[in-house]
Image (cartoon, rainbow, N blue to C red; front, top):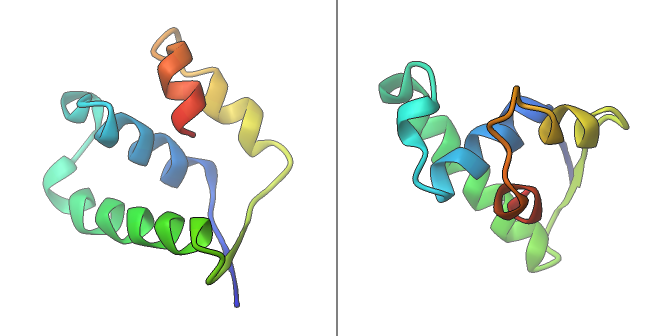
Length: 76
């Protein structure tokens, strides 16, 4: 099974996992979606699914107006 994810999914998951929840707009409403994305990424790591994304995603995830740290890059 393949699933397509856009860069905001990866960005929000990285912020969430790195304790930057305060920088996620509308976290109350987004948190269930973020938790679902985390589960999908975990399933992909186990080889249960394949996650597809655009070629541009890597660039979008690494240029967040100075918010991105080396730690965040390795998370995404």
